[in-house]
Length: 399
Ligand code: C2E
Ligand code: MG
Ligand code: MG
Image 1 (cartoon, protein in one colour):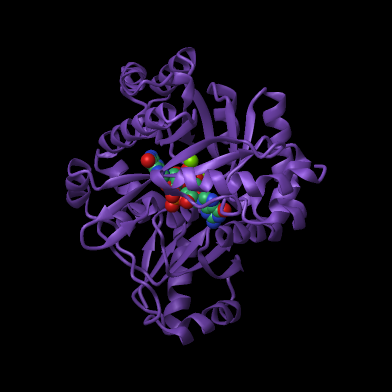
Image 2 (image 1 turned 135 degrees about the vertical axis):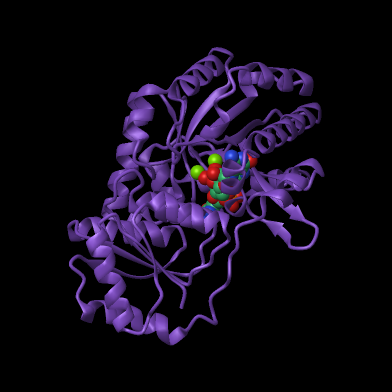
């Protein structure tokens, strides 16, 4: 079983490696620096069936590491390890579950061999055979795909919780691979970021999205279109000018565009980011802080950057109605956004209970499988007709 252990404490690392060897899991890869482990996972296409990660680490903590694992679709087993109190460990475990990772267990430090053995038993029994092998995509293949137009945008509606009115769509890129079929962004965005392809990718996606908004507009439907932008994109100071040119070329107003910025990456050049985002706001492009609550710098970014919208991460949204901690987080995020004069969007609204809870909590808009899955551009008109039928019943009950 290919196993990776990530812990900034070299002693803990060695001990866990030895304990694992005693239990028959030998040849573990031991890493002290989370970023290095991540780079190895993404770049060399190394696959692991089992990963142990410490939560408390400098630079990149375990939660962020886990989030990256989810981004590129890690399909093996995950064990969280922490010296922090039980509640933190539980919360991290819940988040990993929400990211749809296979959590084999959570271990308190110092790890006892009995507990380790208990956590490992089902994993070892299941064996490595059943694990799907996920490989990071090849950057050259991705470069070719961008040039050949293999990237297509799908669109997922956002609707107002109070009225059910469709307020816009979010563009989500898919790679229509000639041999491998549809590939989801989790498997190639990180590759693009690491190999200097993210600018080409984002500009392609943005241009297509703007053109699509222009087409919808010409057909009589004015829709806000949101596009995901990586922090890595915000270094070229002429980005706002480029974007305005694209909007003008597509016959739409900059106010029809929203950029969703993810806060998971460390900012290399915070000054450039601040410059670009401030000027985009001056030009009336809306900015949204995406996946709010998952990184470690979200509050600082909220303070420093001119966001007009806050998207609560789906890891907090789905099931919040029956989980006191999640509910507290969602409600606090909404309250904070309101006090800062921002609009709020909840992602990952998967069922009626989620919908009702968010309406009652006063969130502005919702997005998620309960409303619609991301769809091809030409499927949107059909969905809007269906939604017009369905929406009445969802907004009747008082929120
Ligand atoms: P995101 O911006 O947070 O987008 C929402 C993701 O959640 C999408 O996954 C969407 O399909 C999924 N989703 C929507 N509703 C639900 C729901 O009810 N339940 C669950 N479990 N999931 C839901 P997708 O399309 O795989 O995209 C993943 C991430 O990849 C996006 O997260 C975004 O950060 C990134 N991404 C997508 N397109 C682009 C792009 O063009 N550029 C960049 N830089 N990143 C992109
Ligand atoms: Mg987004
Ligand atoms: Mg998000």
